[in-house]
Each structure stands twice: as C-alpha cells, then as structure tokens.
Length: 89
Image (tube, rainbow, N blue to C red; front, side, top):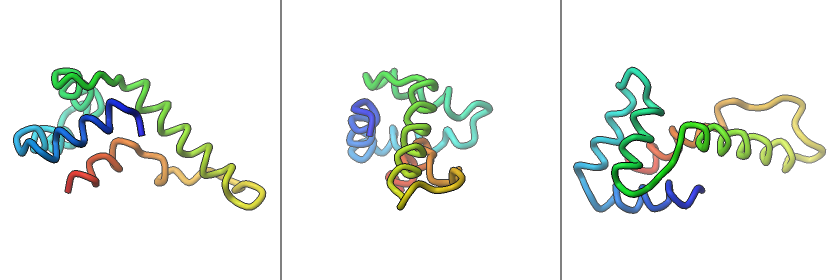
C-alpha cells in the first residue's frame, strides 16, 4: 500500500472523526478528490493520480500472478479507494 494511505489508515482507526469523514467521501460529488483533500489535510499527501496508479499496479500484478496470466482484467479487484474504506469498517 502507498505509505500515505498506510499512515492515513492508522490515523483513521485511532480517530473516530477522521474515520467518519473518510467514510462520508462515498457520498461526495467527487469521492476521490474529497478523499485526497482530507488525506492531505491530515499530513498524508496523496493525489487522485496516485490512487489510479495504485489501482493499475494492483490489477497488473494480479494478471501477472495468475498461471500464465489472466485473459482479461478483473476490474473489481483493483480499487484501492474501496479497499481502504473497507479496512475502516
């Protein structure tokens, strides 16, 4: 996981208000932008582009780790944002 996301997860698990703010980003007009804004405010700098890159890396690694490689990407497996929020619940 990205070091900033790891730090943010630890902070959110210790701080109920931060956890609630991060979970509420699901309802924002632009969830990833709001998530990144909150992360930066809490000294965990991360950009939307970095999350997209992490998603791509996760997906690429899954394709490479399958015997001979999968024939198509599995989109649901590469969502760092949703995996982060799931870790908070």
